Length: 432
Ligand SMILES: Cc1ncc(COP(=O)(O)O)c(C=O)c1O
Image (cartoon, rainbow, N blue to C red):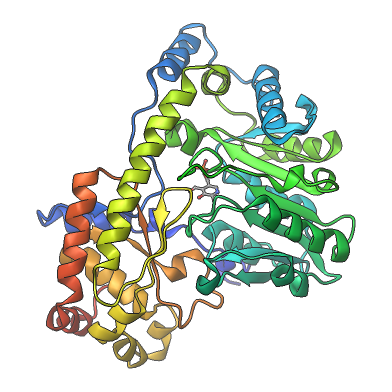
């Protein structure tokens, strides 16, 4: 008998967190690390929300509360999510979670049995693929094509929908590509779902970046397309919109109250409830007129940094970078850079067991971190299946502008350091 279950041996991770110890190791050598790895706004929690959390602590909101989420917060979520999407949402369909992450795995647990197929975007948030494998479901990655600006429509989705499909995960604005769906695109995707998917197939619409939009882009939800609200789980949360990743408040709107009750049961089984003081902070964040201007300032800083970073990357020989319309990531193609550094041959020459855990972009990612002190993430961090031969990095722009400028300059220098790259790979210490 093995110590670890077969199931847990299938689980993946979120490398943005996993490389934390590597960053500490590099920082301990005295090299300042430019952290472009984490998807975490670098702004403080807005003062009005902070004050409300403190007030609620003082009011003794420190006990067990409703496992589905405080009714007052669920009312605020139902009203706001419904108004923005033109939908009538009742609070009994809302469930609150410790962040936007848990409803991903919970949806897979609630709706899918082993062997059921889960369609998810790739590159995409790593937890989609991780949980699919963990639960013994069948992963069906929808590969996003760089030539189409990482966008897709119903024609791309339709061939993946089969009688075994149970869950279709969408994520707009997208991590890591920054893609924002147009209304036409969502209608086309919805058309494919209505035409091909069984009535009990659920769409998981991860809208956690709904407020981080550039160049006047507008957020649309697939739930607003007629016929889709009945099938869609709309997920969002406080982490990105209010620069509050540590508050651990996320939420989902379920198609029915009965489905919400299943998620509530999972909440009870896993963590009972979420801190009441933070939930009331989130209620204020959603309802306060002070929140919109704070979000607008944060978004305009992200947009300015995006412009600087995209221009700097495109100026590097061997790197091409599209201009994202939302979220706070850029996702450059580093194929040319991998070739220039010899990363593709070096990767091919690695022993088979190591080669299975790495890629040319991973070698570049590690080289940038350990030799140049720039923390990025490789393509494999956003879905392993089908990542081979796709050479990309994700760079988070949720870092100070001066640091990003310095980081891009370091990447430029690294891109010319073939000897340094060779020595790094030959040393063989951190290659996956
Ligand atoms: C697409 C996507 N969904 C969900 C989450 C989870 O957010 P939270 O920190 O609220 O759990 C993230 C965080 O990076 C994300 O990028």
